[in-house]
Amino acid sequence: PSMAVAREKVEQVMFSVLDNLFANTHVKPKHTGILVVNRNLFNHIPSLFTMIMNCYMFWGNVKNLNFGGMGYSTSVIALNLTKDML
Image 1 (cartoon, helix red, strand yellow):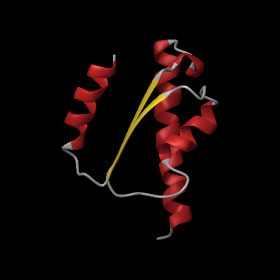
Image 2: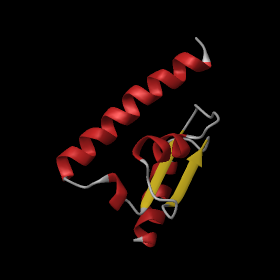
Image 3: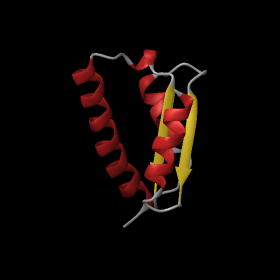
């Protein structure tokens, strides 16, 4: 319906997933070294990476892989690149 509604929905889902991830793995956001963001349709400013960085106060040296608009097959590419970074 609008960019504001879309952004609100993205924040609800994305932050609840990340909150659960950090809680279940007992990893603190400040210990994150790599952040991979794969979005298909919703491209906005600030980017999802920036929204996550600001919400969880990640350090400035977090390595970023930010994929957008490349379709769902990008997930395989993202996994392979992340594996290489690790």
